[in-house]
Length: 189
Image 1 (cartoon, one colour):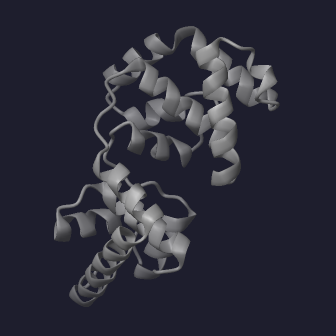
Image 2 (image 1 turned 120 degrees about the horizontal axis):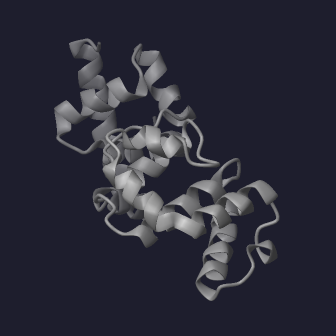
């Protein structure tokens, strides 16, 4: 695990990054969203998060956001998804989910291991399942490239790093994940 010196350095850096996020408009929005995450209790919200996860797979944030909006609008308006989503595999996965998302949501709610459950859904990968879980209210750290880049030099996993910071700050893992992700994205870490 981390030495006392590492803990002190990481805590200072983490708190500095959190302050910088609050001073940055985009960062503040991301942080407020992470602070407001609660367990999902609505099948429609679950469906929206699934669409988000599938659409975002393999795309930049900016590109995916535009496509996601068009897909959600098409769903709301009952339009054929082929008019807004050209990727056959993603479109078919979303269409299958639309058929029984309420039942899938109930199965998710009953699942003991929600992250593993999400990982078994079509088009939800080994990292995306953590991202989806985070926004569905599972308090977790996603082991993506940003988190690996921060944790590896410290000799710990992203989850271990997140839990160490959580012990020192009391922040949720979702908030910690967001702060570290944004800090790495901005080059602050």
